[in-house]
Image 1: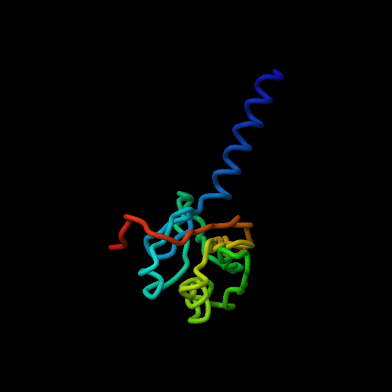
Image 2 (image 1 turned 30 degrees about the horizontal axis):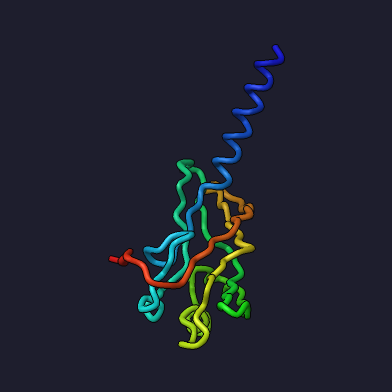
Length: 144
């Protein structure tokens, strides 16, 4: 009987985890942990999520995030997403990610991500969305 209880608990835990963490973050075609090539930064359009959850009763959308750009000397600059437009990157954010020739970003970090979980029959809850990190440099991956 004890084994059945443990198995049930583990299944419930796995099911809860998989429903609340089904997101992959991306900037255009580059996904979390990718290195983005220098020449691409002038073309960046948006920060968004892929929802891999199969529960059709809910819509998942970015609600908010914090962007931190860190250069090789350790200097950091931070931004907060625009209210109502969480996938939108301002020109100031793009400029920080593009960097200057003598101060190129080392890491581009999106953290404090919140995801709105909207029940199609009404009601919204907010989930912690973790973080996403992108790196700057030469890469062979090309956006299509």
